Image (cartoon, rainbow, N blue to C red; front, side, top):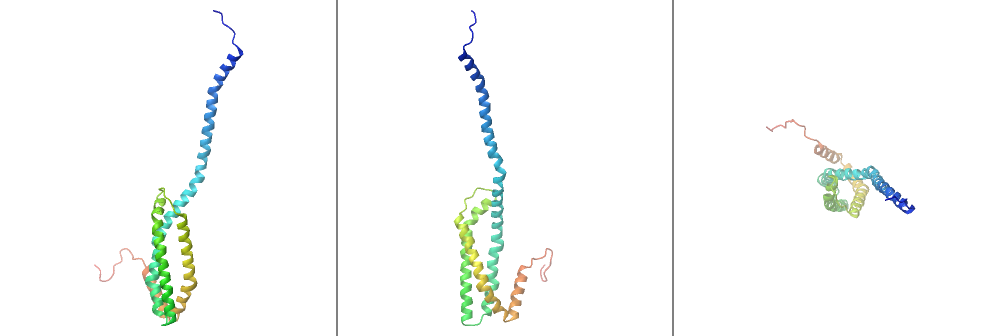
Length: 193
């Protein structure tokens, strides 16, 4: 049987069939390139994640070791020293009011921290965690106000009261110094085995 010459439409269909597999490769490249574009963004996205993790880890350690200890030290050392040295009457009443307010603020900040700490510990370990941004903002603002108030009101009054008698200021300084001394490894205390 003689061969019939190809019709133009058959030729075009054959060319499309040949071209179609190439289009699939081309389409595949588009998808690959799109994914690679996203992959290329990854280093820039990791920097904020790593920073968030570092901040969370730092705050978990800092709050327990510095903020809580600072509150305890004020309540154990500074507040009693100032109250004891305050003059009876209005001055002593004012000191007691300030101490009561500052102590309440300490407890409130510590309660707020207790609510945030579990999520921050997760974040510090690189685990997914939902953080309450409003609660963080509230804690930061409240502590800033607390510190400003203490710096403006209580500490200048404390200085004036304790400065009247150099022994009172020296006693507070010595007490703080002793509390901050770290025991030396291998140091033998008299009377100990």
